Amino acid sequence: MASSSSASNHLQRMPSSIAELAQKARNNPLRENQSLKYYLKHAESNRREAFKFAEAGDLESAFIFFARTASLVLETLPSHPDYKTALDDNQRANLNMNRQEIIDNLGQLKTRISDRYEAYRRDHPEAEESHQRALQAQIEYEGSQSIQLPSVPDDRERKDKALQEVQDRATKLSDELVQLHMNDPNLRARANIPFATEKAIESAREQLGVREKGRLILSHRHRGIRTKYCGNALLGLLLSKVQSPRLLRRVHLLMFLCQPHQGARRTRLTIQRRDTTPLRHRHLSVCLLHPQL
Image 1: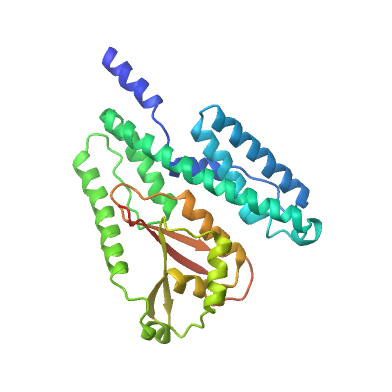
Image 2: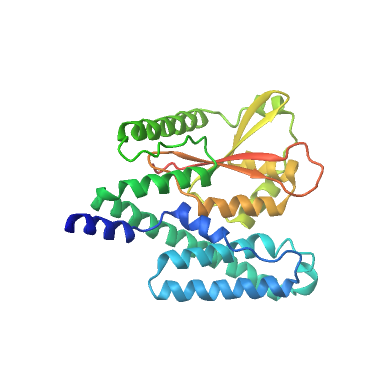
């Protein structure tokens, strides 16, 4: 009886994964079509809460509120119709500084939370069932080619097989991407896509703060031919074909909110455009490689 109680207490104290926290962060509905002041107020409120929880040592709550702040600062505010008229240059510059601060804090918290989560799993093997549920939530969050894990607690063989299939698919796709020669001019000609200038690409990299933590890979289908782009070629494609700063900010935000599931070397993200801009491609499938794994 004591052993059962101890195991239950361990499960209750099990830390959350990054995917679980990201899901909680998204459960924060705000009213649409509100004034710029309304969103600024919520952004500042979430930012204060994030720092308060971080100072108290509550990393999970801090991550949730920083993620909510990032969504407002990176997506909602810049796309608001009054963003350029209601704010002067200094106010927008302050927002840009806060944006980088939020991203930096998210990156640091993500590392600490992930390390703590994995350490707990090593020290408490009895919590593996909870980890399976967290892993399933993460697979769904990342939008990868997931399969449903068996829910029968005693069927560990089927669970292990299911996990291995997910990992094998991830590794295979990653290896295929790494072998691509993205500088081959035939790839660009075959897809018949106009690319932005190198100056525009570098400007976008600076604006987005793209770092060396991972590489973005875009899988693109045109006239039945699938082509993959990475690095500057990807940003060139986004700039010239999509021309949506909000979508670029969304990609940037997802880079910091996602983490690879166990054993994976890449994360697949599917981004669906919700605006009415007449574009040929309304869905982008983006992969974030994790070369450190």
